[in-house]
Image (cartoon, rainbow, N blue to C red; front, side, top):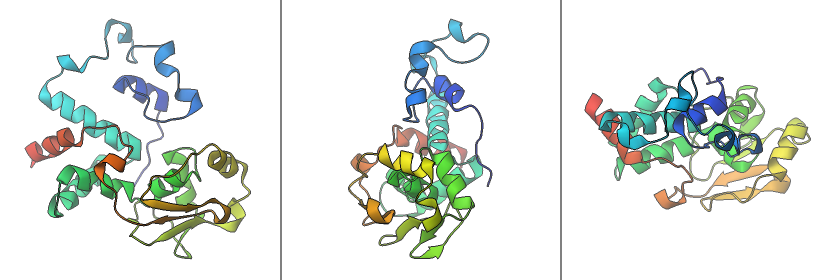
Length: 208
């Protein structure tokens, strides 16, 4: 599945939110506090003007951008989330959180989800000691994810790891061994994902 390599700042300005916590994006809305495009200055970041469908679509697109997944994948995750017991929206976020590229990003081995995906695809990631190059692989409880020895001195990895704070409580992190483990499934309040997942559930429900 292809990755989104488009302009990240432009997308975030369209949403009116900084969704990628990197220094170079921190002030994009301060510099240009309006949507991108020729008529951006004539518009405002006000969701009140949108229809219910527009709000639902916006939240779905935000989630897809945050996790760097395409529409086909997102639909499949929704179907799987709906089949699981519990809240469908929380199930959807938990599935996305368990993606291998996202776990690499959460660990701080990569500065962005896009860099994390590249690291996985290039074969620099191991799961339980075996190399795995599938970004969409769903990490299971107890799985130990680490990066290959040759990448542990990589300047980008070192810089990313140094600038990363603590991982969420449902992970165990060993920075000295460049290893992260999923200890349990998270609760919604533990997922640092700035979306209204109920709107996303409503979006896909009306399409089925």
